[in-house]
Length: 419
Image (cartoon, rainbow, N blue to C red; front, side, top):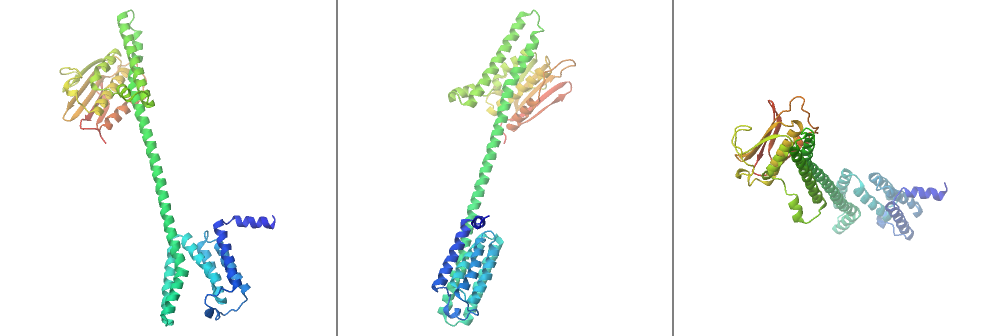
């Protein structure tokens, strides 16, 4: 590699912020030496132990300027090297050229050193200033000279350190603000991902509750058609029910898709996606009966499944329920009937919905499938959805076998949604 190439390679290790100050300080110091303006105090300079030609002074000046090149990477080492070359310069008669370089090294050490080293350096500078002022007071009797020298030392030593501390504090504040902004951006991204995940879970739950019941009923009713033989009236009834379930499933799926895509007016979207209510329980029960279940429903207090007077689900006790509780109860009944039709086709089923003591009690009990009675496959998502709906409104739910029956029992508070 040629000499210019080597020089460029070495220079490339240092940034412009390193090279320009070092070169500038060396040129300025050499110019002061050339014009003879370098002595700090001429009387003191005459007492220097080494009387050397001016050219020799460029050696310690060059060494101190070389330390400026590494003041950002090795701030305390650069300051130590500068003090070493400064001591040599003192023996030759302390010069203004060296003073400029040492001020830059003090500034760099305070700004770029570790927090602990920077604080120790500030304390050391303050201690040196106090010792210097005390020594002047004890030696020099002229107050004007003492004040002048103290002010000069403050300008030379303390001002670079104070300036560097101010810049460092501003830099730390900027870094803290940047870090806080990054953290806020991260939190916002996590919140966004959580919201997306929750929305996906809600959409999956709604799609399952809306579609699964209809498709399960269609599958069960389709199987039943083959066993009806020549009973044309029964076949027509089942086919009408299958068509109704198909149309309802398509309508509800279309409404949800249009809601997600934002199609139609706000009024149309609200009317199409209005949540199901217990007041519409009759249609749900008719679909369950068409699927082969023997369903009995009770609204109001009762002693046990199937006991007590039956009444319509639209009676006064079920009117005026909170919308969230009304929807949760409807979906729980829908899922429980769907599971009963899938896993215990033809079983007797009892549905109880009653408000009591500030809570809405929902209970669906069906006979367990006997041996040899096949059921449709399931993934267990329905049970999870029922649990999530009950918890969402602050309620509880259990689904378990009780004797020869399967019992789903939910308690939903009517005071509002749970947190």
